[in-house]
Length: 463
Image (cartoon, rainbow, N blue to C red; front, side, top):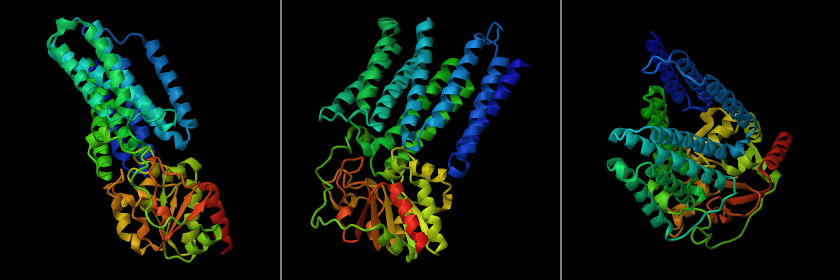
């Protein structure tokens, strides 16, 4: 009876994972989906405590440790979720990816070092769990540091080759230790931990800012794959299915991010794209900067038929999403058609802009993806670029020498007028100068995005 009830709890938990994952596809239902999936995991833990029995018929031990872990982990998670700013959301995602990878690596290491088994299947799963979990941990911690501007890129022509060698060493060691288990004994696990830790650091180090959304998606996938190996080691279906869901969805997202940037995954991992590239992508010809006043922009938008807002990381830094929504509502009250043009990799993690705007209660149908926004750009009277840079850079189409050449971008320069809201003329996260700033249809509106938006709102109310 206990076994039946345990499996029932696990089945319900798995269903909540699938339902929750489905609901994450829309900002309108994402919060509820996350809650449902979390409730399913809590249910699975309760079922394990109440109904699990080992081969000797003994129940789960160490109940105080389990409850203590739930309380401490839940409390820390709640505090982080409440206190984290939206600008720091990518860092938190990277941190969570890293802790998930570390947990999976520890599970695999404990099973490997405590079991005398030399069965090939067990060793493959244990070593892969250690390797992938450790790479996820160290890579995610480096990504966290880079996103938080605490770690700088390390660039060298030999780095791709070093990483390829380390990659081969990691998986070569897994193969050797699996099929010749007596040759190295327990030392294989320790060597694997060390080399995988170094590889995780070095493989993320040279990756530039523009590719960080892809890396976050990949590390998220790896954390799920490592968790699935933990489920295999324990014979735990809910761990296995949860890991597979995270791993598969992360791989799909990684593929979509690569497609959005017109790059292969291998090109991302060894291409050193973004950050510090000053050659290519520079503005050619006329270098004149045309400035606009708040009053000019308010009048242009108030008497336009169609206005597009293109959000970027600068919007997140300024926390201007609520002001943007109020600005949009004021324009609509004046009969202006307003939409948000969203680039898939705007910000520093996949879906960053969607999350920000959903937080401000912007209706989801107003968020227009890049592929749908570009065809209507020529019919748009005014485009307001709020803190975006690389995703609206025309060098991606016009300059073969630019590091972002070939990357799909939002073609804001095809609109009748472009207003770029920025603090300064500094390049974006990829470190590439943007010729859009000097385009004949572009005017710059300098200042903090939130303050400027509030001034625009005040001006609109007087018109």
